[in-house]
Length: 174
Image (cartoon, rainbow, N blue to C red; front, top):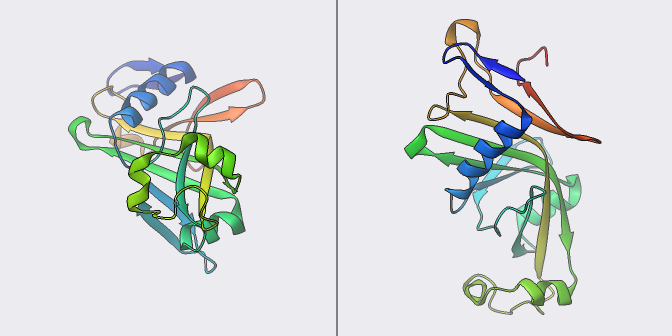
């Protein structure tokens, strides 16, 4: 359990996950952040599927994009959700993989995707990115999940482990 002394709020992993999901559900398009070959962070807006119960989501992209190239190279991605109305953010950090399977692409194809992918789900350059969160970081003034500024700045976090989620802080000491 993490205690937030500034507001006397105590939350376990389940409570933090509930707050994080509420924030994610309010943000239509997060930033997808990948790492370039020189170690630089590259961010762009993406339109994802709804977040599943097991903290996975999907979205279409072009195989020739920098995003797809970086995911293919690292197998990692970060999604950042900013909710100004609640002075909150959630960052999902996790594994990403490229799916080429036409049947899978057809099964989840959204007609609105033709705007960005006119060749449709059978186009070999259209790929599906499958993402699973391993770590979730959040800060929410609305929910009292903020640090005491006199004790250093950090975010609340939950990390996926074999037996479920564990709450912790993002302090350098872990």
